[in-house]
Amino acid sequence: MKKTVLKLVAISLVSLMVITGCSSNKTETETSADSAYKAITTEELTGNIGDDKWVVVDARDNNAFNGWALEGVKRGGHIDGAVDFAANWLNVEKEDKDAILDEALKTKGINPEKNVVLYDANGIDSKAVADYLSGKGYENIYLYDVNEWASDDTKTMVQFPGYELLVPAGAVKALLDGETPETFTAGKKVKMIEGSWGEEKESYTKGHIPGAIHINTDSIEPPPAWMLADDATLLKVMLDNGISKNDTVIVSGEAQMAAYRVAMVLRYAGVEDVRVLNGGTAAWTAAGYELETSSNAPVSITDFGGEFPGNPDMVDTISELQEHLKSDRFTLVDNRTMDEFVGKSSGYSYHDKMGRIPGAVFGFAGKTDSNSLDYFRNIDNTMRNADEILAMWQNQGIDLKNHLAFMCGSGWRAAEVLYYANVAGLEDVSLYSDGWIGWSNAGLPSETGEVVK
Amino acid sequence: MKKILYFVALMSEISLVATMFILESFAEKKAGVNHHVLARRHQWETTVFSPGNKDVISFVLSFIFAGFLALLVYSFIKRANSKEGLRFRQIQLIIGMLAAAFALMSQHMIFFFDMKTTPYITFSAMVILGIQTIVIALSGKSTKEGKNLK
Image (cartoon, rainbow over all chains, first blue to last red; front, side, top):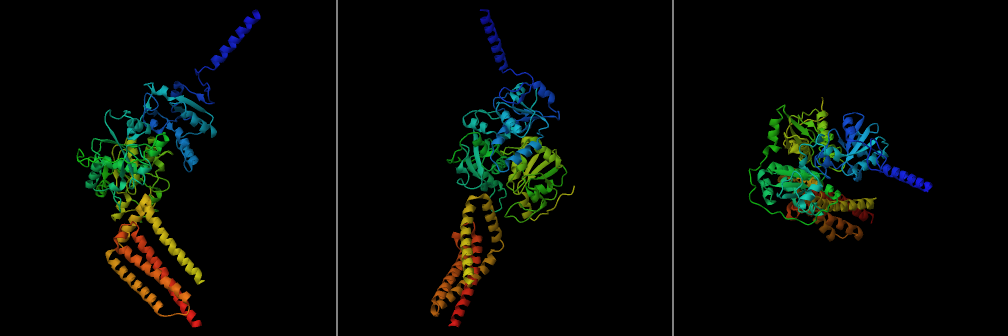
């Protein structure tokens, strides 16, 4: 009897130990139950932010980092001092993917010598990035649930000032489902536009956001020069496509630059609320949503509903640019490749003149050709970290307090860059739309060669 | 050796014609090709193919066409010993005339104006015309040598 009782007590004790051992209550530096990575408390994280031996990494979707409150977090944005390395970047199929990701790690100061804190809101993203880093030899990896931080109002969550200009696929889906995501107005219909070059059969019918109408970029910048059309033509485009001043519009497209170009023109026209799908239609399909292939006909209107153009200062003409360049409170930011900037290449097979506008400052674009914007996009074509963009410009000696006018060859790259500048919080900006092609075709002065500092 | 040259000439001309079809098709579908083709078209229409130059080009093409036609008629009228050689020359003359005619039509017919690659078509036709001129000259020399040996 005694032996039986003793056995029962022993079994109970062992069972109790096993149960408490498997408990989900984490204690300090306890290894996560389902991984080899360490957990970190909010207090520890708070104490280590700013320490050079630590780097805090947001593993969530780019839109969450920018400011959107996704996946149920109480407040949107990122932990103050955190950098971004989204888990979905690991799933992108792209040439030189490994090199691109390695460069991102380097740029963001994520290296094996540091203690790396990865955070997310779903328990999946940070684990994915942790596995990736672990495979690269990282050993000091900590995982953190950002819900704890976001729900504590004493902790700072940083939202980029213009984050709402770039819309996540989930928010677009919510709108299509009749919901009202954050930053949108309840009851107000949002118009979807697919902006791309060519007739519908070129890109639009291959797939677009459901309900979107098509705007051919040739209608806003007609051949053979592809310079911005005159105001009368642009007004007709607005009316023919049923776009009025008071509309909220989301522009998307397979080729993002085209979407940004159309979006810029809508803002110039005076449409009050013009946003772009962050990452283009690829972001839509990556989120698991279906594209629509059927055509949606626009319903034309007769009254734009306001002065046209409503924002003339958004776009600089050549003559306006010539005046602005005389001011030391104005900076012309040249968003072309370095080869285009120094005059080794025009960037366009149909344009022979090479060089730059005197006074322009190199503001980066892509690394390869006039269709690329590597310095401004993540591997999934979402917007690069706004802090990194601003730092890049400041390293070029660009005074961010100046009025910045963005230019490129003919206004596409610069349109996208201008949007990113707005997201970053720069409001005193404009687009020199005609770009290098317009300037050089007008026979105006130019310069070539490296810039002597 | 001449047969090799003739073969190369034929392949070059076929490639040029095929390229024009492909270029026209791509100019409808690809923004980059479209921009390049239309921009160059605009540039050439204000320079090489300006209204004044077009008249000169048309005159020269018409002259060449007429010259080839005259040679063709002459080849039918005059009997030659080597019918094989003559037939080849006649074919080359007809191709030359077609090239000249295409070059002329591309500058004057609405059908061609509606195409994006019109100046490219004109250039290609003129290149083919140039190749044909060389081929015809060589074949004319062969025919004379053939006669002299007999």
